[in-house]
Length: 450
Image: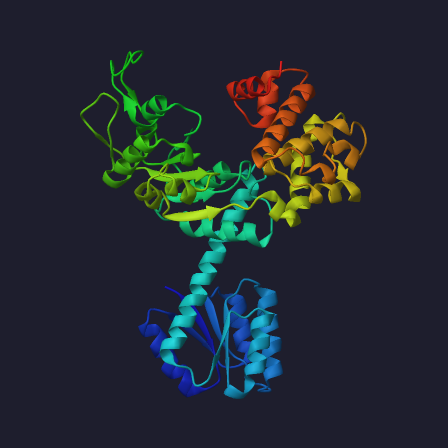
C-alpha cells in the first residue's frame, strides 16, 4: 500500500482528502504543523508527501520553502508535491525548481490530486529501478559501456530500467563498439529471467545454413555431417534470453522462422517434423538501418515489428564526450595490470583534450584499446600524455574516403597495434581486441597481416 504524508493545518481539507485517498488505496498519515511533519518525515518512509507551504507556527510561504529544503536535504529522493493558494504560484514554481515533484493550487481537484500523487509514486519507483540498474552496471560493466552521466546515455539507462522487467522484445541500435551486447546482458540481468541463461549469437558471422541449424537445431541425418540430434539456441535459452546480434544481417528466410518461433512459441529443428515448445525472450541488436533494409526488401516488416517491442539507441562516443574523463579513468584502472609498475596513472590535460577531440569511429571498443595501449606505452611515467595515445591528428580524420574505408583503416591499425603489443601472440591479441581467436585470424586475412 502506498504511504502518503498529508501536511496541512486545514481540518476540513485533512478530513475530506484523507478519506478520499484512503478510498483510492493510499495509507495516509497526517501532520498539521511543521515540527510534527519533520518528525514524521524523519521517522518513516513515505512514498509521497503532500505539503502545504503555509503552515504554523508562522504561516509564511518562505517558511514552507525552508521546510521543503529541509525535507529534501534529509531525503534527496523524496517525492514532495507542494500545495498553496492561487496567489502563491511563483513560490510553487520556485519549489519545483528546488526539487519538489509538482505543485497544486488550492482548492485542489480530487481527481487531479490522485493522478499527481500516483505519478509521483511511479516516478519514485522508476528512479529506484534506474538507481538499482546503475549500481548493477557499475559493478559488472567490464567494458565500461554502462559508465557515463551524459543526458543521451542516461535516457538509454532509463529505457532499459523500464523495459527490463517486462516480456517485451527489445531492439538495441547503435554503431559498432557502442556496447550493444553489454546493454542486452543488463536488460536480461534486470529482468525476472536473470537466473536463467543468456545466450548470444552473431547472425552476421554464420552462413544461412549454419545459422538455421545454430538457432533451431537439427536431427541426425538432416544434412551431411549431422551425425546426431542437436538442440538449437532457442531450446538452449528456454526460460531465459536469446540475444540476436547483428540481426540486420539475418537472411529473410530465417527471419520468417524467427517470426514463427516468436508468435507460436515453437521451433522446428532442421530435418524434423515435430516442433518443440520454448519460452524465450528475444533481445536483438544491429548497427544497420532496418528501415532502409525494409525499403530494399532485405528485412521483413512483420519481423521488424515483432522484434521491436521497445528500442534503445546507444549514442556513439563522439556524441557523449562529457563521459570521456570517467570512461578514461575506468579503462586506465582496468589496464593497471599492463603497466610496468602496476600503479594508477593520470591523464594530462592535453591528453584529455586529444581524447575529447578524436572522432572515435570504433567507439568504446577503440577507446578501451587506446587506453590499454597508452598505459603500456607510457612506461614508468605516472602520467599519460597525448604522445602515448597514438591518435591521428584531427586534420587527418577525413582522409580515407568513405566511412567504410575509414573503419577498415582503423580496424587494420588496431589489429596491428594489438599484435605488436602482445609480441605476436594471437590469443592475447584477440582477447585485447574483444575478438575470438578465429575472429582475429579473419581480420588478419582481410587486411593481409602476416
